[in-house]
Image (spheres, helix red, strand yellow):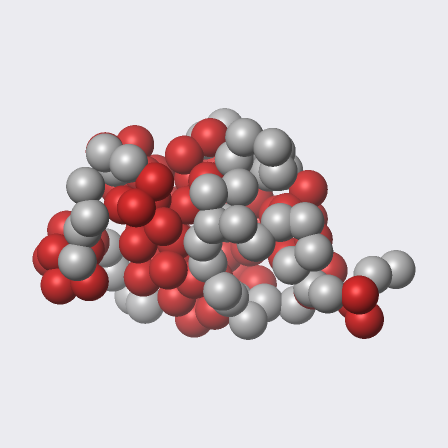
Amino acid sequence: MDETLDEAMARLRHIDVRNGPIPEVLRQIVDACDRAEDEDQLCWTGTLVIEVFLDLRGPEAWTPFEETMRSSVKLRKAYTCSDHSIPVEVSRRFDALVDPGSEDVGGSMPGRFGPQATP
């Protein structure tokens, strides 16, 4: 299925990443991931929802998001499509939860940070 941007926005518009309670937003994100019919829909979820959620909600969202990633394969897959602006050390924690062989649907791992960020 080749979902358009407009279709993805319509499918995901109910998720209030800016103001919703973090546990409820995470539940809705996982639900959107679980309902995704293919990797295209997972990537739209990563780009339109997860990326914005992590950037806007900041540190208060990072630990709950990490905990939720541990139990959701589809969330981990959608996460690989996000191009967030969170600190590298936080992103590395999230990245460590993703199996690059089977869950990297966004094609961003390994090497998300380039050689300059390698320890």
